[in-house]
Amino acid sequence: MNGERRTVTVDNRTSLLDLVREHFGLTGTKKGCDAGACGACTVLVDGHRVNGCLTLAVRLDGAEVITIEGLSRDELHPLQQAFIDQDAFQCGFCTPGQIMSGVGCIRERHTGSASEIREWMSGNICRCGCYVKIVKAVQQAAKGR
Amino acid sequence: MFPFTYTKAADTRAAVAAGQRGGRFIAGGTTLVDLMRETVERPDTVVDISGLPLGEITTTRSGGVRIGALVRMSDAAADRRVRNTFPVISQALELSASAQLRNMATIGGNIMQRTRCTYFRDVSAACNKRAPGSGCAALEGFNRSHAILGGSSQCVATHPSDVAVAFAALEASVHLLGPDGERGVPFTEFLLRPGNTPEREHALRPGELITAVEIPAHPRPLRSGYLKVRDRQSYEFALTSAAVALHLGGGVVRAAKVAAGGVGTVPWKLTAVEQRLLGERPSDRLWTAAAAVAADDAEPLAHNEFKVELLKRTVERQLRVVGGTR
Image 1 (cartoon, rainbow over the protein chains, first blue to last red):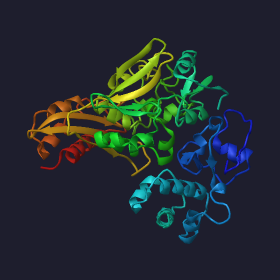
Image 2 (image 1 turned 90 degrees about the vertical axis):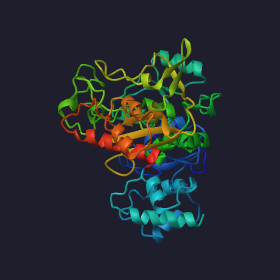
Image 3 (image 1 turned 90 degrees about the horizontal axis):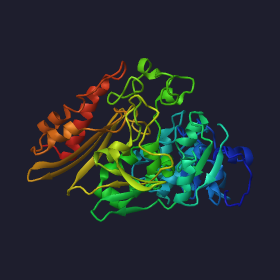
Image 4 (image 1 turned 135 degrees about the horizontal axis):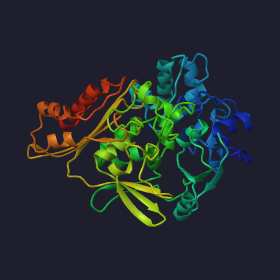
C-alpha cells in the first residue's frame, strides 16, 4: 500500500475502497456511486487503474496498490501540478479519481489527441463539468512524460 | 452485502469441484461484486479463479484465435493478433465500459455478465429472472432500453455485452471444462433466450468453467468493425449496435457475418441480413436492402419502438463502413 507492506484482517465483504478509507485512514480516494459508475474510487493495482469499489480487498494478497496519497513523495506528481495549473476542478470530489485515472491513461499512451483522452477518461464523471480543463491537464502531464 | 465464504481455486479441477458444490466463480468481479452489494446476487461461496492458467491468447492451427477466459478485456483489445485478424473484437471491447473496468473484467466474465435491466437490479421490483414467478415489471414498465428481439412473456431484458455481439457474428465457440471433461458450445447456443425460464441464461452445467472463447478462421482478407449507438458518446450500454465482418472477392460478397446488440435478449445473429448479402455486388443499394430485413422479427414494447428503425440504420451504416461506399 503506497510502498509500504500492510497486513490486515478484514471482513471478506470489504472493498478496496473501504479498506483504504476506513482501515488505513487514506481518505483521498472517494466513494461516489459505490457501483463502478463514477470512477471517484480509481486507484492503481499492480500499475493498472481500477475501480476500488468493485475490488474485494481479500483478493489483493501480494498486490501493489497506489492511491492518490502515494502517487508522489515530496513534490506534487506532474499530473497533480497540471490539475492546479489548468484549474481542472471545482468541488474536488472527483479529482483524486481523475488524477489516478489520468496517470493510468498516460501510462497506457492514450493521450494522442483531446478526443482520445476524453474517450479513455470517460470512466471518471465530474459533476462540476470540468472536463475541458481535465483534458488539458492530462495533455500537459503527458507532454512532460 | 450478505456474508459469504471466500476461497481460492488452486487449479482448474479444484475450481470445477468447488463450482459443483455451488460456489460462484469470481474473476474480474465487476458484475458479481456490484450485484452482491445490491443483494441481487447472494452466493454462499465465492471461488476466486483469477490464479488459474487461463490467461493466454493463442493462434489456432487453422488460423483462428483462442482467447483465454481470464484474459482482461483491455489485454484482449490490445492484442496484436486480435486487432489484426478481428478488428471487430477490439472495437467492441474498447467501446465497452470504462478503461478501469476493462482493466479488471475478463472475457469469460464479460459473456457471463448479467443484464442491466433496472428491474432486475432492484430487489423490490418483480423480476422473473431474479425471482422466478414474481412477474416482469419491465413489460408494463419503463422499457425503453429493453429487447425488441427474442423476448417472451416472462422477460425482455437485453444481454449487455458488446464483445458477445462480435463473438456471435464471427460464430465463435465457448470452451468449457466440467466434471466430465472438456466440451465446446457454439457461441450462439451458449447464451439462452428467456422463454419460460428467464433465470436460465446460459448452457453451463453445474461446476462447468469457461476456459476460452475461440474464434474460427474466416476467409481472408476479412474486413470487420463494430458500431455502437447509445445515449451518450462513451461509457454507456448500447441502444443498438452492429458487428459486421465481410469477405469480398471477385467483386462480390463471399462471406458475411453480421450480428446486433442492444436489441435482443441475447446477442442477435442477423442471418437474414447475411443471406441477403451473399453473392451480391457491394453497393450502397445492397447495404440498404440487406439492412432493411434486420428488424423483420422485431416485437417492440411501449417505449422502444424507435429501436426498429435505429437497428436498420445501425446495420446499414456499419455495412457501408466495413464494405465501403460505392
